[in-house]
Length: 339
Image 1: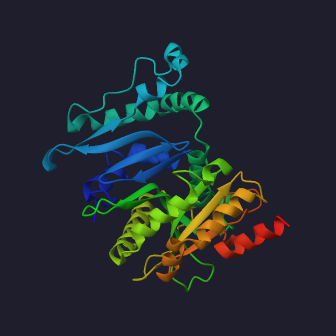
Image 2: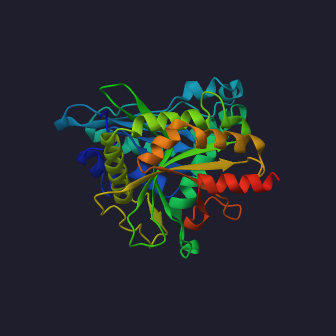
Image 3: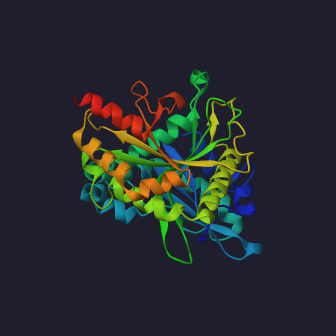
């Protein structure tokens, strides 16, 4: 298989309390507009669906240090006003600390600049909006980061990754998923379900090269191989445990996520989330009927992989088990609305 998304023991230790990177993790924990995603021995911190900063390991094992990057020029060039406003002032801290001993101050300097980086990104997103990615992060926050005021709210999904890409290093084929989650059914006796989440914002996103049907085909090509299914299950379990260990997967300051990964075999589902699409959309019905009739969908069903659809939850983005229905049930509801 291709590279897995995980952090070294040293990286994890440096992110935790007393570690040199802990101020950054603490910043993320206290700012629910940020989302920390684990990559192949680096982390990507997202803001409004865009990459706010990436943190990489650097140097030999005995002198390990870190590097932080933010594409300031790429964001600023989209809006010349940002350059004249001078939001970044004298610029950002250096990408690399001079020595291992300098890391602590260097990390603090980067944390102090996060509000400035957000301002740059806000300006860029005002010119080049990315609503699908913004809602992606809202869904992450709503289901993973509930505070104590809402501790009685019981959602059923725990999101462990965004913009997840799985590749086969042998055959160069893979799958790309908007989000990766674990679904804990209401009956806690049942094992969790690995959920590959695809989000579509507006009717225009339903078709074309990145449309829903093409996405189902890509997923099918990848998951049709048993080794890929097992790798995805193991990767999801590992990401869940790492996010939980870092304290980014919580339901309130006193609450913790349940142990949903203690099962050797987990099922896989594909979950569609539709945002700002008319409730009686003819286009949506047409696309879903095409998916239902295609050979790839039948192949997925034959491999025990179902397509589910999330129905609205009272204008919110919390995902409840009771509001998740099958593809067939959702199509039937659309047909009733179109009568």
